[in-house]
Image (tube, rainbow, N blue to C red; front, side, top):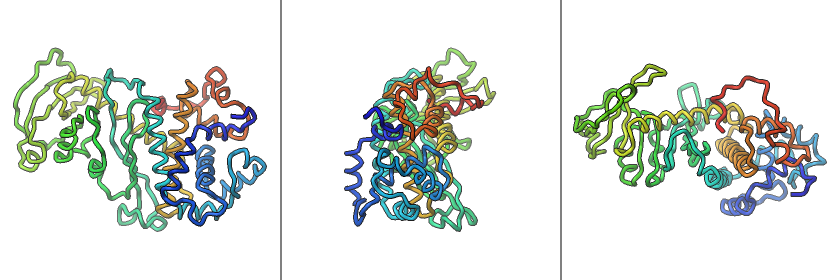
Length: 387
Protein backbone atom coordinates (compact mmCIF):
# COMPACT_ATOMS: atom_id res chain seq x y z
CA UNK A 1 0.00 0.00 0.00
CA UNK A 2 1.34 3.42 -0.97
CA UNK A 3 2.47 5.38 2.12
CA UNK A 4 0.18 8.27 1.15
CA UNK A 5 -2.99 6.16 0.96
CA UNK A 6 -6.09 7.17 2.84
CA UNK A 7 -7.03 5.11 5.88
CA UNK A 8 -10.21 4.03 4.06
CA UNK A 9 -8.18 2.75 1.09
CA UNK A 10 -5.75 0.94 3.41
CA UNK A 11 -8.67 -0.81 5.12
CA UNK A 12 -10.35 -1.78 1.84
CA UNK A 13 -7.02 -3.16 0.57
CA UNK A 14 -7.64 -6.19 2.80
CA UNK A 15 -10.66 -7.13 0.68
CA UNK A 16 -10.10 -10.08 -1.70
CA UNK A 17 -11.01 -8.15 -4.87
CA UNK A 18 -10.79 -11.14 -7.28
CA UNK A 19 -13.33 -13.02 -5.15
CA UNK A 20 -15.62 -9.99 -5.17
CA UNK A 21 -15.44 -9.70 -8.95
CA UNK A 22 -16.19 -13.42 -9.38
CA UNK A 23 -19.22 -13.03 -7.12
CA UNK A 24 -20.44 -10.04 -9.12
CA UNK A 25 -20.08 -12.01 -12.35
CA UNK A 26 -21.92 -14.99 -10.86
CA UNK A 27 -25.07 -12.90 -10.31
CA UNK A 28 -24.70 -10.57 -13.31
CA UNK A 29 -24.19 -7.53 -11.13
CA UNK A 30 -22.84 -5.39 -13.96
CA UNK A 31 -25.65 -6.08 -16.42
CA UNK A 32 -26.49 -2.73 -18.09
CA UNK A 33 -24.25 -0.88 -15.59
CA UNK A 34 -22.24 1.94 -17.16
CA UNK A 35 -20.56 3.90 -14.37
CA UNK A 36 -21.53 3.09 -10.76
CA UNK A 37 -20.12 -0.44 -10.35
CA UNK A 38 -20.95 -3.00 -7.66
CA UNK A 39 -17.56 -2.27 -6.09
CA UNK A 40 -18.45 1.44 -5.95
CA UNK A 41 -21.74 0.51 -4.31
CA UNK A 42 -19.99 -1.71 -1.78
CA UNK A 43 -17.38 0.95 -0.94
CA UNK A 44 -20.01 3.65 -0.48
CA UNK A 45 -22.13 1.45 1.80
CA UNK A 46 -19.03 0.38 3.73
CA UNK A 47 -18.12 4.04 4.16
CA UNK A 48 -21.65 4.70 5.43
CA UNK A 49 -21.32 1.89 7.97
CA UNK A 50 -17.92 3.04 9.20
CA UNK A 51 -18.97 6.68 9.56
CA UNK A 52 -22.51 6.01 10.87
CA UNK A 53 -24.34 7.88 8.06
CA UNK A 54 -28.05 8.32 8.71
CA UNK A 55 -29.52 8.40 5.20
CA UNK A 56 -28.79 8.43 1.47
CA UNK A 57 -28.81 12.22 1.51
CA UNK A 58 -26.30 12.16 4.39
CA UNK A 59 -24.05 9.77 2.43
CA UNK A 60 -24.24 11.93 -0.69
CA UNK A 61 -23.50 15.18 1.16
CA UNK A 62 -20.56 13.74 3.07
CA UNK A 63 -18.89 12.19 0.03
CA UNK A 64 -19.47 15.27 -2.13
CA UNK A 65 -17.69 17.34 0.49
CA UNK A 66 -14.65 15.12 -0.17
CA UNK A 67 -15.07 14.82 -3.94
CA UNK A 68 -11.34 15.37 -4.56
CA UNK A 69 -10.57 12.20 -2.57
CA UNK A 70 -12.93 9.80 -4.35
CA UNK A 71 -10.24 8.38 -6.61
CA UNK A 72 -7.90 7.79 -3.66
CA UNK A 73 -10.76 6.04 -1.86
CA UNK A 74 -11.15 3.63 -4.77
CA UNK A 75 -14.37 5.12 -6.10
CA UNK A 76 -14.59 5.36 -9.88
CA UNK A 77 -18.23 6.31 -10.40
CA UNK A 78 -20.10 9.44 -9.45
CA UNK A 79 -21.92 9.51 -6.11
CA UNK A 80 -25.59 10.44 -6.46
CA UNK A 81 -28.41 9.63 -4.07
CA UNK A 82 -30.74 8.30 -6.78
CA UNK A 83 -27.99 6.16 -8.31
CA UNK A 84 -27.20 4.56 -4.96
CA UNK A 85 -30.90 4.06 -4.18
CA UNK A 86 -31.46 2.31 -7.53
CA UNK A 87 -28.39 0.13 -7.07
CA UNK A 88 -29.56 -0.94 -3.60
CA UNK A 89 -33.03 -1.75 -4.90
CA UNK A 90 -32.04 -3.61 -8.07
CA UNK A 91 -28.64 -5.27 -7.73
CA UNK A 92 -28.85 -8.78 -6.35
CA UNK A 93 -28.23 -8.83 -2.59
CA UNK A 94 -26.72 -12.31 -2.97
CA UNK A 95 -23.56 -10.67 -4.35
CA UNK A 96 -22.83 -9.23 -0.92
CA UNK A 97 -24.15 -12.28 0.93
CA UNK A 98 -21.74 -14.60 -0.87
CA UNK A 99 -18.88 -12.16 -0.42
CA UNK A 100 -19.65 -11.95 3.31
CA UNK A 101 -19.55 -15.76 3.52
CA UNK A 102 -16.06 -15.71 2.00
CA UNK A 103 -14.89 -13.05 4.47
CA UNK A 104 -16.37 -15.03 7.36
CA UNK A 105 -14.40 -18.11 6.28
CA UNK A 106 -11.21 -16.02 6.17
CA UNK A 107 -11.84 -14.58 9.63
CA UNK A 108 -12.66 -17.95 11.17
CA UNK A 109 -9.30 -19.32 10.01
CA UNK A 110 -7.51 -16.40 11.66
CA UNK A 111 -9.35 -16.89 14.97
CA UNK A 112 -9.38 -20.70 14.90
CA UNK A 113 -6.86 -21.02 17.75
CA UNK A 114 -8.41 -18.41 20.05
CA UNK A 115 -9.88 -19.51 23.37
CA UNK A 116 -13.49 -18.79 24.30
CA UNK A 117 -13.72 -19.58 28.00
CA UNK A 118 -13.99 -23.39 27.91
CA UNK A 119 -11.01 -25.72 27.54
CA UNK A 120 -12.21 -27.61 24.47
CA UNK A 121 -10.52 -28.36 21.14
CA UNK A 122 -13.69 -28.87 19.13
CA UNK A 123 -15.48 -26.08 17.28
CA UNK A 124 -18.36 -24.59 19.28
CA UNK A 125 -21.24 -22.68 17.70
CA UNK A 126 -24.00 -20.65 19.33
CA UNK A 127 -27.27 -20.48 17.39
CA UNK A 128 -29.88 -17.79 17.94
CA UNK A 129 -31.88 -15.06 16.20
CA UNK A 130 -32.67 -11.40 16.77
CA UNK A 131 -35.66 -9.40 15.58
CA UNK A 132 -35.41 -5.97 13.95
CA UNK A 133 -38.69 -4.06 14.06
CA UNK A 134 -39.89 -2.27 10.92
CA UNK A 135 -42.82 -0.10 9.85
CA UNK A 136 -45.50 -2.24 8.19
CA UNK A 137 -46.57 0.50 5.78
CA UNK A 138 -42.98 0.94 4.50
CA UNK A 139 -41.94 -2.72 4.61
CA UNK A 140 -45.07 -4.72 3.66
CA UNK A 141 -42.91 -7.62 2.42
CA UNK A 142 -41.81 -8.40 6.02
CA UNK A 143 -45.04 -9.19 7.92
CA UNK A 144 -44.78 -9.94 11.61
CA UNK A 145 -47.98 -8.95 13.38
CA UNK A 146 -51.22 -7.33 12.23
CA UNK A 147 -49.84 -3.80 12.73
CA UNK A 148 -46.12 -4.47 12.68
CA UNK A 149 -43.36 -5.62 10.34
CA UNK A 150 -40.03 -7.16 11.27
CA UNK A 151 -37.12 -9.18 9.99
CA UNK A 152 -35.11 -11.84 11.78
CA UNK A 153 -31.37 -12.37 11.66
CA UNK A 154 -30.70 -16.07 12.28
CA UNK A 155 -27.03 -16.42 13.17
CA UNK A 156 -24.68 -19.30 13.88
CA UNK A 157 -21.76 -17.77 15.76
CA UNK A 158 -18.36 -19.41 15.99
CA UNK A 159 -17.37 -18.73 19.59
CA UNK A 160 -13.67 -18.63 18.68
CA UNK A 161 -13.49 -14.97 17.79
CA UNK A 162 -17.26 -14.41 17.75
CA UNK A 163 -17.34 -14.64 13.96
CA UNK A 164 -20.65 -15.61 12.32
CA UNK A 165 -20.31 -18.73 10.21
CA UNK A 166 -23.91 -18.69 8.98
CA UNK A 167 -26.45 -15.88 8.73
CA UNK A 168 -29.95 -16.06 7.28
CA UNK A 169 -32.46 -13.21 6.96
CA UNK A 170 -36.20 -13.91 7.06
CA UNK A 171 -39.39 -12.05 7.84
CA UNK A 172 -40.52 -11.99 11.45
CA UNK A 173 -43.04 -14.83 11.10
CA UNK A 174 -40.44 -17.56 10.50
CA UNK A 175 -39.92 -19.66 13.62
CA UNK A 176 -36.34 -20.10 14.83
CA UNK A 177 -36.39 -23.88 14.68
CA UNK A 178 -36.83 -23.87 10.89
CA UNK A 179 -33.26 -22.63 10.49
CA UNK A 180 -31.97 -26.03 11.62
CA UNK A 181 -33.10 -27.34 8.23
CA UNK A 182 -30.65 -24.97 6.51
CA UNK A 183 -27.57 -25.88 8.53
CA UNK A 184 -24.98 -28.34 7.27
CA UNK A 185 -23.90 -30.13 10.48
CA UNK A 186 -20.18 -30.33 11.16
CA UNK A 187 -19.06 -33.65 12.63
CA UNK A 188 -17.54 -33.26 16.09
CA UNK A 189 -18.74 -29.67 16.53
CA UNK A 190 -20.96 -28.48 19.39
CA UNK A 191 -24.16 -26.51 18.71
CA UNK A 192 -25.40 -24.47 21.67
CA UNK A 193 -29.00 -23.24 21.48
CA UNK A 194 -31.95 -22.33 23.66
CA UNK A 195 -35.31 -24.06 24.05
CA UNK A 196 -36.73 -22.49 20.87
CA UNK A 197 -34.69 -25.01 18.87
CA UNK A 198 -35.88 -28.13 20.69
CA UNK A 199 -37.28 -30.24 17.87
CA UNK A 200 -36.21 -33.84 18.34
CA UNK A 201 -36.51 -34.79 14.68
CA UNK A 202 -34.15 -31.96 13.71
CA UNK A 203 -31.82 -32.66 16.64
CA UNK A 204 -31.63 -36.26 15.45
CA UNK A 205 -30.20 -34.98 12.15
CA UNK A 206 -27.39 -33.27 14.07
CA UNK A 207 -26.73 -36.45 16.00
CA UNK A 208 -26.70 -38.59 12.85
CA UNK A 209 -24.08 -36.26 11.34
CA UNK A 210 -21.76 -36.80 14.31
CA UNK A 211 -22.38 -33.33 15.78
CA UNK A 212 -23.24 -32.58 19.40
CA UNK A 213 -25.91 -30.25 20.75
CA UNK A 214 -26.49 -28.62 24.11
CA UNK A 215 -29.87 -27.06 24.83
CA UNK A 216 -32.32 -26.33 27.62
CA UNK A 217 -34.99 -28.89 28.44
CA UNK A 218 -38.61 -27.80 28.29
CA UNK A 219 -40.60 -28.04 31.49
CA UNK A 220 -43.18 -30.41 29.98
CA UNK A 221 -40.58 -32.91 28.73
CA UNK A 222 -41.78 -36.49 29.19
CA UNK A 223 -39.03 -39.04 29.66
CA UNK A 224 -38.09 -42.25 31.40
CA UNK A 225 -35.06 -42.61 33.65
CA UNK A 226 -32.41 -45.09 32.44
CA UNK A 227 -29.16 -44.55 34.34
CA UNK A 228 -27.54 -42.08 36.73
CA UNK A 229 -23.89 -41.03 36.54
CA UNK A 230 -21.74 -40.62 39.64
CA UNK A 231 -21.40 -37.03 40.87
CA UNK A 232 -18.50 -36.09 43.13
CA UNK A 233 -19.52 -32.51 43.90
CA UNK A 234 -23.25 -31.75 44.12
CA UNK A 235 -22.81 -28.05 44.88
CA UNK A 236 -23.59 -27.22 41.22
CA UNK A 237 -24.44 -30.50 39.46
CA UNK A 238 -27.55 -31.89 41.13
CA UNK A 239 -28.17 -34.81 38.75
CA UNK A 240 -26.67 -36.37 35.60
CA UNK A 241 -29.04 -38.89 34.03
CA UNK A 242 -29.33 -40.92 30.88
CA UNK A 243 -32.96 -40.73 29.77
CA UNK A 244 -35.24 -41.89 26.97
CA UNK A 245 -38.11 -39.92 25.50
CA UNK A 246 -41.57 -41.36 26.10
CA UNK A 247 -43.95 -39.23 24.03
CA UNK A 248 -44.72 -41.00 20.74
CA UNK A 249 -43.79 -38.04 18.51
CA UNK A 250 -40.62 -37.25 20.45
CA UNK A 251 -39.50 -40.90 20.61
CA UNK A 252 -40.12 -41.33 16.89
CA UNK A 253 -38.09 -38.19 16.15
CA UNK A 254 -35.24 -39.10 18.52
CA UNK A 255 -35.26 -42.81 19.45
CA UNK A 256 -31.81 -42.78 21.10
CA UNK A 257 -30.94 -41.92 24.69
CA UNK A 258 -30.27 -38.37 25.84
CA UNK A 259 -28.26 -36.93 28.70
CA UNK A 260 -30.19 -34.77 31.16
CA UNK A 261 -28.14 -32.56 33.52
CA UNK A 262 -29.69 -30.51 36.30
CA UNK A 263 -27.47 -27.58 37.27
CA UNK A 264 -27.67 -25.11 40.15
CA UNK A 265 -26.31 -21.67 39.24
CA UNK A 266 -24.81 -20.14 42.41
CA UNK A 267 -24.77 -16.65 40.86
CA UNK A 268 -28.42 -16.41 39.83
CA UNK A 269 -29.58 -19.03 42.34
CA UNK A 270 -31.59 -20.77 39.63
CA UNK A 271 -31.92 -24.41 38.68
CA UNK A 272 -31.36 -25.13 34.98
CA UNK A 273 -31.87 -28.40 33.12
CA UNK A 274 -29.83 -29.19 30.02
CA UNK A 275 -30.16 -31.82 27.30
CA UNK A 276 -27.27 -33.08 25.22
CA UNK A 277 -26.25 -36.06 23.12
CA UNK A 278 -22.68 -35.95 24.43
CA UNK A 279 -22.00 -38.52 27.16
CA UNK A 280 -18.21 -38.04 27.39
CA UNK A 281 -17.62 -34.51 28.64
CA UNK A 282 -17.93 -33.76 32.37
CA UNK A 283 -21.34 -32.46 33.36
CA UNK A 284 -19.91 -29.13 34.53
CA UNK A 285 -18.23 -28.60 31.13
CA UNK A 286 -21.59 -29.07 29.41
CA UNK A 287 -23.06 -26.39 31.68
CA UNK A 288 -20.13 -24.06 30.99
CA UNK A 289 -20.66 -24.55 27.26
CA UNK A 290 -24.26 -23.42 27.52
CA UNK A 291 -23.17 -20.36 29.50
CA UNK A 292 -21.13 -19.32 26.45
CA UNK A 293 -24.35 -19.09 24.43
CA UNK A 294 -24.66 -15.60 25.86
CA UNK A 295 -21.94 -14.52 23.40
CA UNK A 296 -24.42 -14.59 20.52
CA UNK A 297 -26.74 -12.30 22.49
CA UNK A 298 -23.84 -9.88 23.00
CA UNK A 299 -23.03 -10.11 19.29
CA UNK A 300 -26.58 -9.03 18.38
CA UNK A 301 -26.51 -6.21 20.91
CA UNK A 302 -23.11 -5.07 19.68
CA UNK A 303 -23.94 -4.93 15.97
CA UNK A 304 -27.25 -3.17 16.65
CA UNK A 305 -25.41 -0.47 18.58
CA UNK A 306 -22.36 -0.06 16.36
CA UNK A 307 -23.55 -0.86 12.81
CA UNK A 308 -26.38 0.53 10.69
CA UNK A 309 -28.85 -2.37 10.70
CA UNK A 310 -31.82 -0.81 12.51
CA UNK A 311 -32.44 2.14 10.17
CA UNK A 312 -32.30 1.46 6.46
CA UNK A 313 -31.37 3.44 3.34
CA UNK A 314 -34.11 1.77 1.29
CA UNK A 315 -37.47 0.07 1.86
CA UNK A 316 -37.31 -2.82 -0.63
CA UNK A 317 -36.35 -6.30 0.46
CA UNK A 318 -33.28 -6.20 -1.77
CA UNK A 319 -32.10 -2.88 -0.31
CA UNK A 320 -32.54 -4.06 3.29
CA UNK A 321 -30.69 -7.34 2.73
CA UNK A 322 -27.93 -5.56 0.81
CA UNK A 323 -27.38 -3.14 3.69
CA UNK A 324 -27.32 -5.91 6.30
CA UNK A 325 -24.87 -8.05 4.35
CA UNK A 326 -22.55 -5.09 3.72
CA UNK A 327 -22.68 -4.35 7.46
CA UNK A 328 -21.65 -7.95 8.14
CA UNK A 329 -18.82 -7.57 5.62
CA UNK A 330 -17.58 -4.46 7.42
CA UNK A 331 -17.72 -6.16 10.82
CA UNK A 332 -15.80 -9.21 9.59
CA UNK A 333 -13.30 -7.09 7.62
CA UNK A 334 -12.43 -5.08 10.72
CA UNK A 335 -12.03 -8.35 12.63
CA UNK A 336 -9.65 -9.62 9.92
CA UNK A 337 -7.58 -6.41 10.00
CA UNK A 338 -7.50 -6.50 13.80
CA UNK A 339 -6.07 -10.01 13.76
CA UNK A 340 -3.61 -9.53 10.89
CA UNK A 341 -2.19 -6.33 12.40
CA UNK A 342 -2.25 -7.94 15.88
CA UNK A 343 -4.14 -4.99 17.34
CA UNK A 344 -5.02 -5.30 21.02
CA UNK A 345 -7.76 -2.65 20.97
CA UNK A 346 -11.38 -3.78 21.05
CA UNK A 347 -13.63 -3.79 17.98
CA UNK A 348 -15.58 -0.88 19.47
CA UNK A 349 -12.42 1.21 19.88
CA UNK A 350 -11.22 0.39 16.35
CA UNK A 351 -14.55 1.41 14.80
CA UNK A 352 -14.58 4.64 16.78
CA UNK A 353 -11.09 5.48 15.52
CA UNK A 354 -11.92 4.59 11.92
CA UNK A 355 -15.11 6.65 11.94
CA UNK A 356 -13.04 9.83 12.43
CA UNK A 357 -9.88 9.04 10.45
CA UNK A 358 -10.97 7.53 7.12
CA UNK A 359 -9.72 10.56 5.17
CA UNK A 360 -6.33 10.72 6.91
CA UNK A 361 -3.13 9.23 5.49
CA UNK A 362 -1.69 7.75 8.69
CA UNK A 363 -0.51 4.12 8.27
CA UNK A 364 -3.25 1.84 9.52
CA UNK A 365 -1.07 -0.23 11.84
CA UNK A 366 0.30 2.93 13.44
CA UNK A 367 -3.19 4.39 13.81
CA UNK A 368 -4.50 1.31 15.60
CA UNK A 369 -1.43 0.58 17.69
CA UNK A 370 -2.42 0.06 21.30
CA UNK A 371 0.15 2.42 22.84
CA UNK A 372 -1.23 5.30 20.74
CA UNK A 373 -4.82 4.72 21.84
CA UNK A 374 -6.06 6.36 25.02
CA UNK A 375 -8.69 4.57 27.08
CA UNK A 376 -12.23 5.66 26.17
CA UNK A 377 -13.80 8.13 28.54
CA UNK A 378 -17.27 6.63 28.32
CA UNK A 379 -18.14 3.84 30.71
CA UNK A 380 -19.08 1.16 28.19
CA UNK A 381 -20.43 -2.09 29.52
CA UNK A 382 -17.73 -4.78 29.44
CA UNK A 383 -20.33 -7.19 28.08
CA UNK A 384 -20.20 -5.35 24.76
CA UNK A 385 -16.48 -5.98 24.32
CA UNK A 386 -16.75 -9.09 22.15
CA UNK A 387 -13.03 -9.10 21.41
